[in-house]
Length: 222
Length: 237
Ligand code: B12
Ligand code: SF4
Image 1 (cartoon, chains in turn brown, red):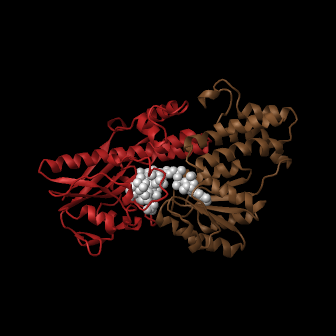
Image 2 (spheres, protein in one colour):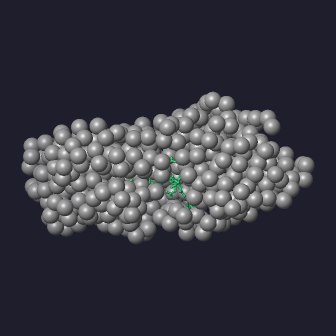
Image 3 (cartoon, protein in one colour):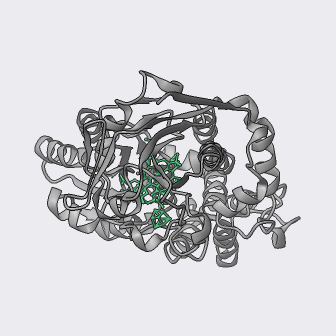
């Protein structure tokens, strides 16, 4: 079974979705994360192991490569697609409670900003690390974040912004969330955001790439 | 001076598969399947999704204050900071510009992402960025032709949000255009809608020149394009 988990991880890392997918070219004609995940479940593997020893491992590897500028956005998206396709086979186990998520991550692009590619990438990577992700979309104000945190007690919150003029809205949102639900951990990111800015607005964590957020979340629930 | 407005069809622009591959991080012609196929699919329908418009307004009453690092146009002060005042100091006139690819391509991208088609959604996003840049290249080239015919030259383009010039000054820039010019509006947070839009200024005069951008003028240390960028045509940003 371990060998199968390794193969699943490999497919996710290299973005091999299924048999029909031509990507990556050197795996053309081979089965992908989709078929292998089904095969593992059918063979009686623990769904939790399929997730943690297979899918999550592959996603972590691509996240690190992306952080280190060894791959570009399209490769990450192929991996995310392989992951989400395979996850369909695990859906019933999430619903029954047989597989538990590591936690909940609420994410949104802050009020006044409509950019979403960066936020989507963070969403995919965090989902791929075993968290449930609640994506509130773009132009999200304090109230919407607070409602989501109330619905998911103990969740983490991620804020994204792409312009300096919308980045400043993070300060109010961080303050509002922490006033309404003290103790909530808020992560921030986006092109103009920095570690200094994080300190200034009293957010809990800043990372320039999604993997940093994944590492922080994993450390926080360990 | 008068307002100049342009409209382009997608096929008038130079948005090639090579350019999109490059933006996505690949060497032109080197993106593996299914990328080229998906790029072609998006390029194939892009003409249905775009409303490509842009334009500029030329103002003659300009002044650069090198002490305070400001630019003055018809009495409006722009706090453009050191790099831009340096680049524009010899201008006689200025062209304020805006350009957009229209809302369709971003909406298409968002829909695809929402449906789980991440790659095509991302490609559509990149195509949208390239459309607006390419349209603005055409407008700039036309402005250059007109100016050259009277022996004048133009500078590169400079935008709020670059080289220390605050995005917040978009409101001042937009005050020079008629309301909803080219279908572009500005939110209170200075975001242009449609998303795939650009704005800025171009210096004009007998003494100015296009020098090409150099990324070392830019304070965007985390920029993912910084190293890859060729300085000859560094107007990706
Ligand atoms: C492509 C691009 C454009 C395109 C398309 C814009 C779009 N996004 O659709 C066009 C040409 C239209 C454009 C226009 C403008 N742009 Co522009 N653009 C870019 C560019 C080059 C890439 C953006 C992108 O797609 N990145 C890819 C995604 C995946 O990256 P990302 O969103 O940053 O997300 C990553 C990380 O930031 C992080 N992350 C994001 N969110 C979060 C959240 C958390 C919690 C964590 C942990 C991490 C995280 O993870 C993501 C994956 O790695 C950036 C420069 C850059 N290199 O970032 C400038 C940039 C965003 N633009 C900038 C500016 C200023 C503008 C304009 C205002 C310029 C102008 N006056 O015309 C306009 C504004 C447009 C508008 N609608 O108002 C500035 C913004 C900063 C600022 N000064 O405010 C940037 C940063 C460039 C710079 N040098 O300063 N732009
Ligand atoms: S490519 Fe990046 S570093 Fe270079 S000018 Fe544009 S934003 Fe700045």
